[in-house]
Length: 154
Image (cartoon, rainbow, N blue to C red; front, side, top):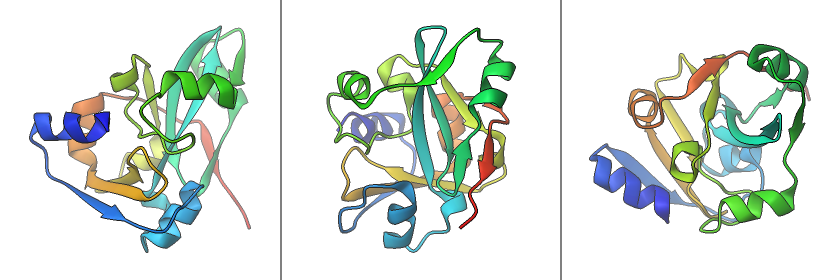
């Protein structure tokens, strides 16, 4: 997986764990016994026809209207699954790591993640999670930080 090679080359500390297949970020949070606030999920959007990666907490939903306004975009929509598969050929669909920079995508991180001391995310497969410090993640990805999510209620 491209993300593991990148982390190794970067020399940062990280931990890989295996868990039963999890197909949503919230399922992965449960499998990893990790609060959803610390589990990052990437959402791919198209802003004015250009793909971008938005990274938000598992227990949050993206607010497309807020994001569109902050980006100053004329149009903003979620990317289709068929498009996402072509962008991340080395990953299981829905298990993309939050490293847009590895796939030539601008990366935007939600402000709600900013204060977390660590981040946990899918490592390219539905059975693998990676945990690393938020400081290291921000150094490696240099995400733009915006406020574009709201907490899901059950």
